[in-house]
Length: 372
Figure 1: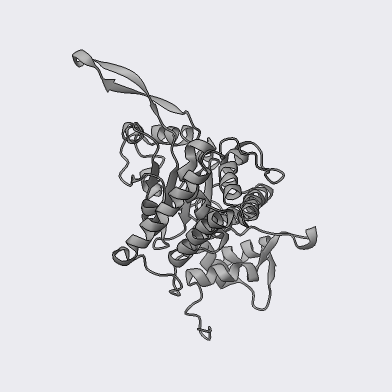
Figure 2: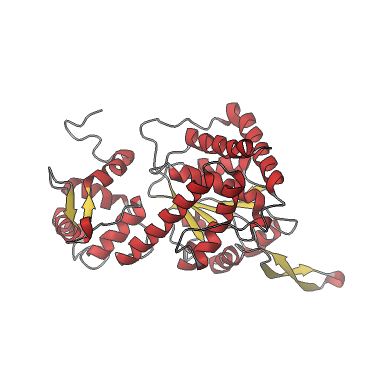
């Protein structure tokens, strides 16, 4: 398999995802491509970042992504009804599998019994060699402790799931949006199953072709990609380098985007809390006509006056909306953070940046006089 052939496998996989998955940033299609391919090389890359397939509302395509993983990832298993830590480790006792967990906003809810142990396994299992002690039947009706492997690629899908920070730090996030304009195809498996499985075999062939070179591969990572970020991104960069072509540059773009988002959230004082559609809808409603940039503090005041029951002192949150809280809601819902134009003056938001998000969510679609 030539370098051009290897690169084309990933190109075709990215095009495949683009046919069926709607994302606000096309680079997330590249991310899905690299992560899917990396599941076939998990042992060789040593670590396997958790993939968080996120959305702010149902019907955005999360289950669709997992359906495609069932045909494209390495030894996939759906674990929507994951009920206990013991079940998870037993799924892996005969070798690595790609674990696909749907509705993690429910199945991994913090108040659900046993979730703490499940989270512990998911956290430890992102690095090769991780194990968990489990009681197994022994001779004479006794039980013995056996170390069971927990290392596996894991994809988690949910509507703004409230995951612990240590789990999120091991995860790479893909944000999906509902396809209200019909720009992507339905995943009609009656017709596309064969093509998907054929593509899956090409991915497996690619992995076999580069498998011996990946474990010792030295790759350059962008400045600042250290610690946990390095553990997350190095496997995908290795896949990109093995593929060649434009894929190493794409991997670097994804890494730099991730680092920039993390820096922006820290600068804005954001916390990892789930967002809501109300914030984006109300932002559209209160945006002053004819202005592109509006300072955050002005938007906060407008939001409180526009919807005092939700953002005011009597809200369920127990206090008025603040700039920090607004920032974290907008960021989690749209991956948009506040900016300071020219590095001076107050932080705020640009209508030009938010407009594509509003369109994808159908916000303002029924506004009088709106085009289309």
